[in-house]
Length: 222
Ligand SMILES: [Ca+2]
Ligand SMILES: [Ca+2]
Image (cartoon, rainbow, N blue to C red):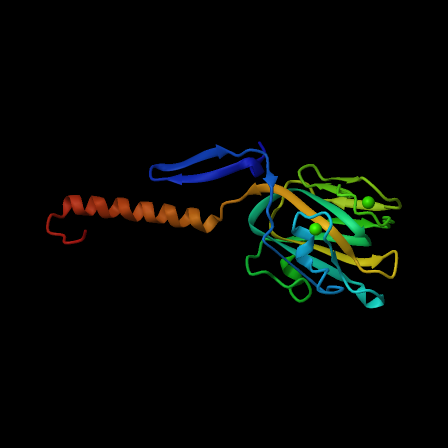
């Protein structure tokens, strides 16, 4: 059984299990980055579903490292990530965090888990509107759809839970910045555990109160 495909739902009489469908496209709600080349190359351009707009970090040696952090808007079992590069990172990692406080990618490293590492890539300037790389986090596979030179690509399996997705680029193959037309992900929403606990506690409290009222005809509680 793949526990990543099971959702827990709470009802007044107890717990039931619901099989969820395969993950759907995740609509990211925000993006921030270590830098932007100009106001025409903001990080949100990488999640706007427009294949003609892009984020780019600054040009020059100080562009390494650069990062872009995507807010998925909720907790998801992350299944796939695709990237359509303009100027690709030669070496980069994908990292995730389920910390709902939007942890810093540079000062709160403990909040982040690396789920993919790619090295040695040489990606031509494209903007084809199709993914240049596809990561599958269900079975831990990497598909390089364009470019050459990838010497290693380690990918986590098991559809890990994530609220934030971070691409952290450490080197480039030109003087130009790390630059992405679109970064997209798919997955299944994960209910927040605290919600289930609260519903269970509220149900137990209501049951106890109802029983007390049945046996206590003098109570004025409603
Ligand atoms: Ca875009
Ligand atoms: Ca590639």
